[in-house]
Image 1 (cartoon, rainbow, N blue to C red):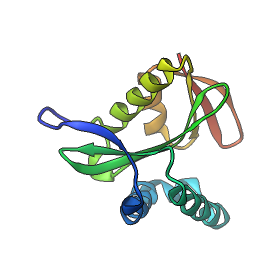
Image 2 (image 1 turned 90 degrees about the vertical axis):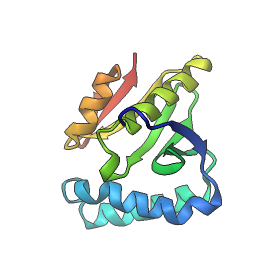
Image 3 (image 1 turned 60 degrees about the vertical axis):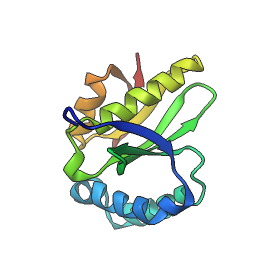
Image 4 (image 1 turned 45 degrees about the horizontal axis):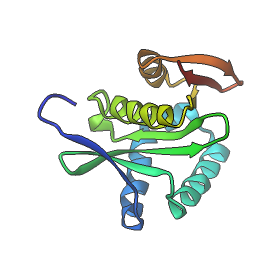
Length: 150
């Protein structure tokens, strides 16, 4: 986001559920045709429903008081895992994703942990962002790259 935007991260609350559902649909609308077949879309919908039912590690990215994205993290024994990072399409490329990932990296570093994530191989925009922020590829599956903060 350009100058003049004050960003912050706050924990998600139950009242965010409808907004989170809308965010999820908008954020993945562009990529879903490249990322998911119908079976995977059904799994993703179930995963999303389970995630917002228990928003313990789900955080809202705000700019000037309004939600522009969300990051879902999972504390694992070996790392802090970014399960999902979603930014509204009209806010992508404006710093919200970078802001959120830097926040996660700082949070993990305070616990002596690296940050890990997976990114779909067709999501080149996200791959570039993660590399720019110092993440390196540590492995891959048929569909995803696994990355870790340096």
